[in-house]
Image (tube, rainbow, N blue to C red; front, top):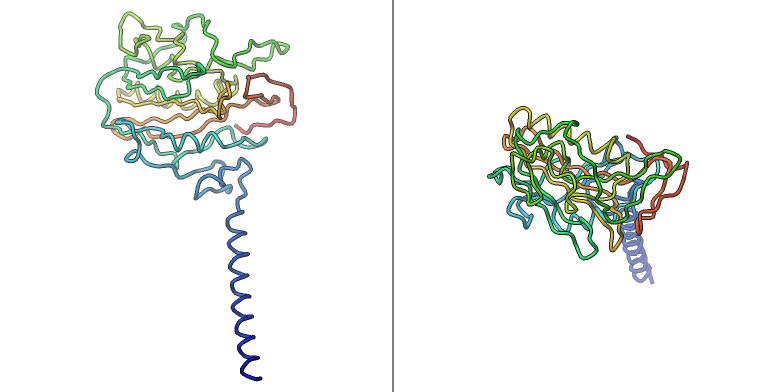
Length: 285
């Protein structure tokens, strides 16, 4: 009888240990405090800082000969939901570009074709130098209507912008085929392959921060590879955000970020781009 009692006690102890491990594992796998949900998609995420880093494959695993955003990483970003009150952008790959700096050979822009829904859902990549820097005096009237485009009729409030993947301010001399043409100093501002429907906030307040970094490097006579990829979820016609990354051939410029396509005070229906007022929508610059 004593021996059987000891056996039962040992079995109970083992069962208890197994239960503790299962509970601990369940807590771990359900864990995550990032309100945007990125911790459910990437390892190594943290909410303790003002921005979020996620682990994304480096350039050696990218299919393109010049690196950049992979299909797998595109799909991961497409799943991230913006939560009111969060920062307008997050770091990708700890803010390190996956572009291959030695791929810079010729001053040009590689424009991807529109997809089957006429969206600019693929990467545009610029191989840029100092002569591509433009200024505001070279702006021209824009008339292209990208998918999910709506005109601004909200009591004078600007909600929508025609967002350029490769900014006009760094595309002086680039024609619609992506080649350098010194007679085209205003850049390619009305190329359907280079435009998407972007919130005015994302375009004017956030994307300009990173475009300024590229312009600064170019003015310092550095050669830069700059890639922009609007991120669409499924068949939605309005992008959820845009991945921007750049690297200079000397490595002094190097960033990789994901900008949420959001507007303070409004929420978008990303299926068709329509916006409605929502004063609870806050965006932390």
